[in-house]
Length: 220
Image (cartoon, rainbow, N blue to C red; front, side):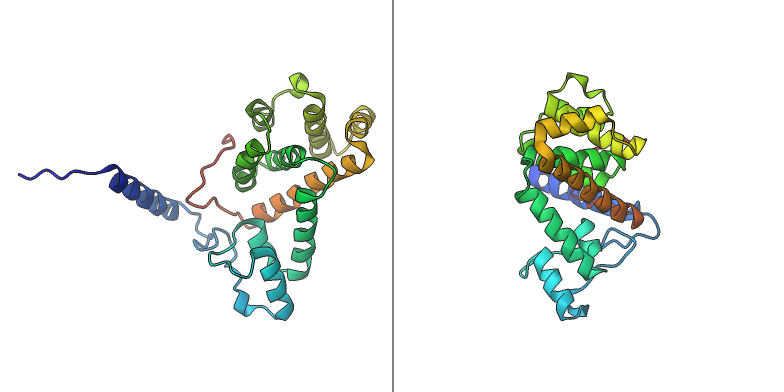
């Protein structure tokens, strides 16, 4: 009897296929597989001229794959989508805070909403921006930030007080201004708010993780 040899490439391909099939099988009943959310994908051809302009601004005119996540969801309201995109681009590329603290702020907001889609995108980005794994784990596992450096600690404290207590203590606010300046402090707050908005949109449409991502936040 002839024995078949299952090479590594074939095994990997079969595994990916099975994982994708499993992903489709386990989606909630109201989730549309193409968009991975409760809303169908917005098609560029269905938009008016201004909508097409915003679509190209956010997706890029030559994009061939669908845009998922908050950007894709935002196309349902093109005018706010443009402003949300411009705010995010400024905070990401031009703000007074470095990429390290932009990503840390994004992670804090994602964690406060237990938002797997946001977290799965920003944990790798945070590592690339120089954020150490122990800092990421402090946010991920809701640890006490007392042992971290001052800047990391105060960003986490600021976010937790905003989202959990709906009040920022004088000490935390004063320390944030001391370390980041007034503009930097407000841009940390704006980044927290930007990713809180993204989390709210993603949660409302129950956006699922695509097949190439795995959940990185602890499951409740």
